[in-house]
Amino acid sequence: MAKEQILVKPKKKKNGVGQYILGFFLALYTLFCAAPVVLTVISAFTDDKELKSSGFTYFPQHWSMAGMNAVLRYGKQLGTSYGVTIFVTVVGTFVGLLVMSMFAYSLSRPQFRMRYGLSIYLLIPMLFNGGQLSSYVIFTGVYHLKDSMLLLILPICVTTMNVIILRTYIQNSIPEELMDAARIDGAGEYRTFFQITLPLMKPTLAAVGFMMATTYWNDWQNAYLYIESKSKQPLQLLLIKIQKSIETLLSNKNIPSAVIAAMGGSIPQWSATMATVIIVIGPVIIAYPFFQKYFVKGLTVGSVKG
Amino acid sequence: MANSKPAAKGSSPAEMTEFDYRKAKSNSFWHNTWKHRAYLVMALPAVIIMFLFNYVPMTGLVLAFKKYDMTRGIYGSPWNGLQNFRFLLASKSTFLNMTKNTLMYYVIFTALGTFLNVVLAIAIDQFAFKKVGKFMQTIMIIPIFVSFAAVQFIVMAYIGSSVGIVSNALAANGHKIAFYRSPQYWPLILTIVKMWNSVGYGSVLYMSVLAGVDTSLYEAAEIDGANKWQQIKYVSLPALVPMITVMLLLSVGNIMHSDTGLFYQVTRNTGNLYSTTQVIDSYVLNAIMKISDFGFTAATTFFQSVVGLLLMLFANWMVNRISPENALF
Image (cartoon, rainbow over all chains, first blue to last red; front, side):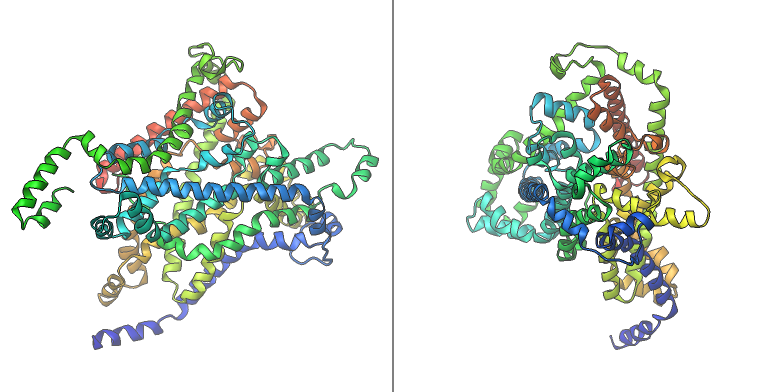
């Protein structure tokens, strides 16, 4: 033992040059990752005239709150969209986690023979899918769910990958004896799951749940395809609408100047756009460091084999 | 699994017989299912959701062989034989272009992405200043949380004509480039955006594997005289191989699919750029939004699904031959 420690000690001193070179490159990459987000924040508070005349810059000469103010002014739709996005994210993540962890639990029961069949059932959508067009035609033509918030929640609620991650965690990290002990003590299957297994799944639920929440928060495609009424428009769709209106403005040179003047403050400007971007992506970025510690622990993928 | 239990209970003969009796009864599949019906009930909600939103849409692929009539619905529309596929072959250039782009980006993103994921995971794992490394990693993961609907504005801030930082800097040096009108630059731009977006997060999975490697392996290697490179080559990399295989295999199933946000939002769906940026998924999205030409589109998605399935089966078969323990099924 003593010898080992002597061997270990000088090794720590070898941190020297190599480590600093490595650190330099890592810092460089970190900078590369952070730079675009930093630019977004800076330009949201840059004077819009400066953005228009000399373009985006990390070192603006004139700061301004006008962008943020403009966003808050056309804030009614923003508030509605925030509500929609939060609702979809919370409900979707909660329902998804519950439904998927129950499925994962039943797939992980060794004595349950149907699990082989169910594993195949789980696997098939990963191999074969109907694609966007069939989904669209079925959801709107057969289910008649056009403009329904169900389509923002249910299609991405259960994914094969997440079920596999949850099942792997139950199999590898929760001792079977605990479940056996609960059963011997007289707990039924449901009680065993909800009172013993589910609480122990916390790290993986946090990791998968956070990834799901992000998927819901960032999902624009389902909203883009299915949502029509403004009261159901999530944040990402609002961003797309803003981009569209900028485009129309830029491409339509024959809009009379009087109209533009009349539209006044409501025309989305660069700094206001960047301010919206911050408001849309901000919550996820702020929430994420609190979940990060679960990422490494809770996200292991095991084999798909049953 | 049932075999492990009698050994534990074997002490009392009375229990043995009772167990054997139960075992014999539970040998029937349906009896087993009934006995564990609680598990079936727990699986049911997910099974139903998957049925409605994954399985039923598969039947929509029959559209490829139909002449879609909105009033008569998907199942009521008349059959059309292979007419839709004939359209597909007739408009060769569109179809070939988007298939080429889909495959090209899949190869670039998967090869470069996997490589960078592994490099980054090893680099952070080897970095001695753990606190700093952790902090850097936190920042590296952030880009995955920025939606592509938002990324498009950030990309514009760099390369938008007359406002972008990069395009202005290039213009100042006499290279005026209208990026949104020059398709030749977009493979590079999209690759940078994609790597920025996904490498930090992608490396987490590999890091979780490296975190599980017994440190005594490194120590033993070091005592045997292995330098850092050799330790990485003979300890870290072999530990990562199973995860790399699984992730590559999983990605093969998506070979015909792309990150639609990247190709539709980041390029702002600009027609000028289609020659290098249009992938099958963005084409299909466009077709749906314009409600045009469902026959051609249906044939395309059919092709997409079938090729995806075949490639996945083929890849799994290959892995099964080379190293069966890493195969998916």
